[in-house]
Length: 130
Image 1 (cartoon, helix red, strand yellow):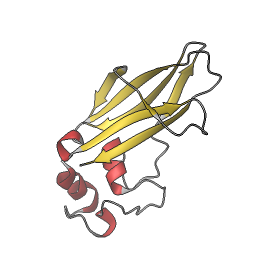
Image 2 (cartoon, rainbow, N blue to C red):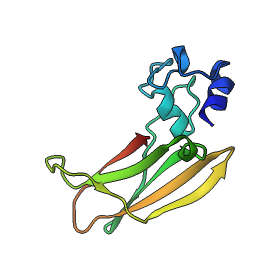
Image 3 (cartoon, helix red, strand yellow):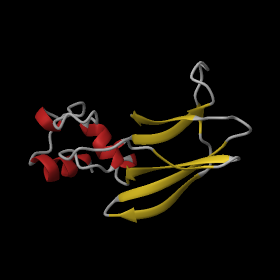
């Protein structure tokens, strides 16, 4: 879980100092809670967690990583999309996620979003913590 992950990377398990949920000890723009959820190393510089892997006339495919322990900590990741940034509501990707691999407790997930004649899609990965 999160406590053992903190101990592994910081030497202590409490939500404080460099290991605090909202801390960013390496200044890469990824907080500790995000690094845990994405399966990142919080000490190394990290990339954008959501990667577009293919775009065709009918769909967009994207991948992200998630820590398999995150759900037990009340953390969920959801891909959302919209056709135009002027739209007010983001749409949630429903039922098209597929786990494609898992290594050392980190699962790579692929999502497929239909394009429906839209020239572009804007995507984001949303982290929610209960």
